[in-house]
Image 1 (spheres, rainbow, N blue to C red):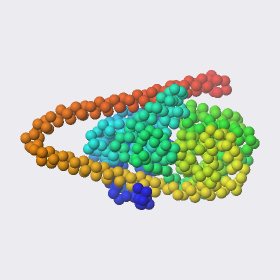
Image 2: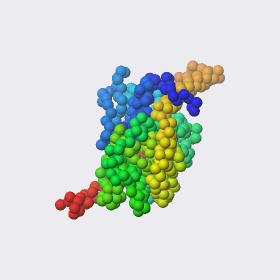
Image 3: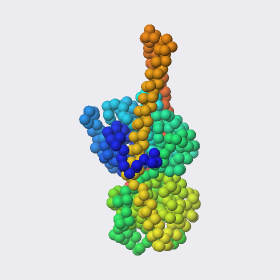
Image 4: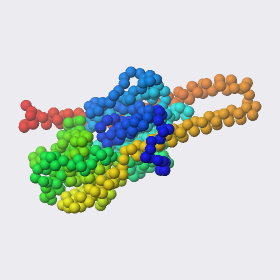
Length: 512
């Protein structure tokens, strides 16, 4: 695999039918943007891709969707399935049970050549569970891309002991599903994720590193805007930037503490935070955590969502990028910042540990050491020459990570997986033929074939019923896991609503 010509797309994949299941699709977050880039690349090179993704409650991206049943000349580009939107992030949903046979019928009319699971969770878990109940000759090969640390999110968002139970539940489910023979490859983005998967006893020969690419034309130092800098820092303050969805698991508590510490040290700075949350209560809670730095003095500026050239200009117009999350499996925003020529200060945990070269393109600090983090920011803020050196190094490093090469690597693995599956089926067929011949040589003639067949029919029926029972039990287990998670998130949502309602009634807040 390492010697494959990743500069080219494999001709053998053109026309192959790929069912790509993802938990989100659109410019929602780094994971979904990565999936979009892969889908676009595969389709542009002739692969036959149908996407399965949940409906979104408040979507910023609505792709073309054909609701009519597919014919031989027409297939849907994306199949949306229903689910319950997460209160913390309505762009993501816990999907309701969906039969794999229905997805086959709605996509290609029959089984695909390969199934690709992007960051499997509520959709991916269902697909893997249903496939493992199929007989070997009907098991479609699976490639997974592990991009979201669900257990890590649960550990941060949920209170004890629910956090421990949720982490254990996800670890158990993932270990059970990933170890099945139908799962051929699990891409992982960083050493942090590989260690986690190995702890779940996933076979090492299935694991393959797959980092992410960056659009080095869009994210470029030339996007720096003097107009935007004047708007952000009219007095010439140092501009710090953070690009992230506003959510508790993204490390905003740490960032707020860092901002207060920098202010206490007398640094003249503006912290420009790009991102938001479709849940207004969550967004308000994050903003309130910065206190007077945001509400009174304007040291912290919340810019809201930015995409495309506006996002690229925000990156390039800053001096230092601050990354405070410890749950990122990769951290695409870190690479986008480096492509923009902006050095990074990040906590040394998760994906950024594999992206940032400490002392060359930025700094990595111990995850819990606020003082070390602030010290590194101060060092860069006070030394323009060092920032320029780091900026040059960061841009050079990002230029080596192109989407085309990374997506071609996925395409080559798809071809190898499809070929391997075909060879295994051929060998299985030969084994059955050889077994029949051996039985004939041992004197088992045609007269015994019919009784054996007659006896095998009830056995097959029993096996089918057992498989259905196991599938039902597994679906119930997974559904209960998501029900518990969903119930807790509903509880949180109600709490946010009550808090927002009570706040709005306070004097000076627009209440009556």
